[in-house]
Image 1 (cartoon, each protein chain N blue to C red):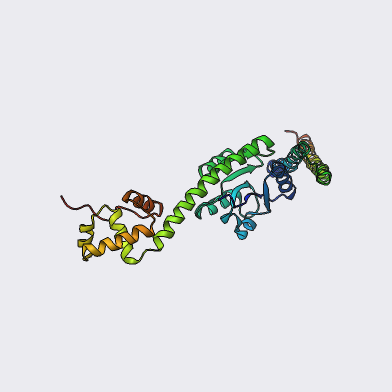
Image 2: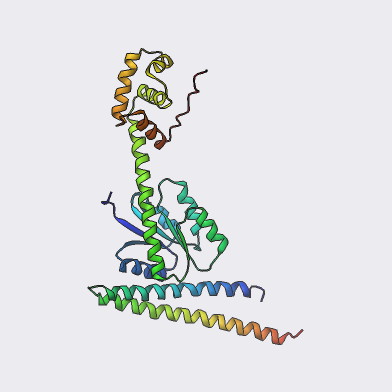
Amino acid sequence: MPESPSVLAALVHELNQPLTAILSNAQAAQRFLASDQVDLEELREILSDIVTDDKRAAVIVRSIGAMLQQSSDDRKERPK
Amino acid sequence: MNAIPVIIYIIDDDAEVRKALSRLLRSAGYTTRLFGSAGEFLVSGEARFSAGCILLDLAMPGLNGLELQEHLAASDCQRPIIFLTGNGDISKSVRAMKAGAVNFFTKPVDDNELLKAVEEALRVDASVRASCMRRHSASAKLETLTPRERQVFEKVVAGRLNKQIAADLGIVEKTIKVHRSRMMRKMNATSVVDLVHLASLAGVNPNIYPKAQA
């Protein structure tokens, strides 16, 4: 699997997107809560997006795990 | 000048990231506009006539962030750019900063840091727009001059006296004085110093005439 390191790098890079969305959503919610008028509908949407992005991150982490597992299996099958 | 709305443009190919960044900026009281690609933003042509700054993802399919920055730099009076990138690519961040980016962050970005950078970018934008407006207004005034007044303008800026200008242009000094006073009024200038300042704002090179031989 010669492409593995670059695929891995791409997946790690991809992980940053949901993490960015989760952080900014959570911090936006904190700021909205600190304001005088709290828009509950907006907060509900934010929480729902955080859940979605967390799941998206989990899928990427699983792919990375599977890839690491596979490359370690490959090494075991072909001992030097 | 305050009549122009301040808008934060968010350009990122990830819809969830766009939405989250937009919420964060709205929670701090800003108005945002979202674009899924550099091309979409360019086509809209929006940022040209507004105040604000651009939050730009570095790695996007199609035109990437650095390419968009280059493209925008080629046109006059553009909004300052804050770059966001998925990985801390040092060489790209250096390139972006050298090309005039006001800041560069690795994702995920903390709210306080980002909001501070936005504030700074808006200060940069205000001064860029002010100098841009001065340049445009100087050029616009220059456009109102007749060809003769324009000649007189260039001579005065180059430091020529009325008598010399009369000789240069082959007309009597009295007529030069008439052209000169009309030109000064149109340029809204009260002194040669004002005029030289306007010339440099409008990009007119004041040294077009060789100095008189000693």
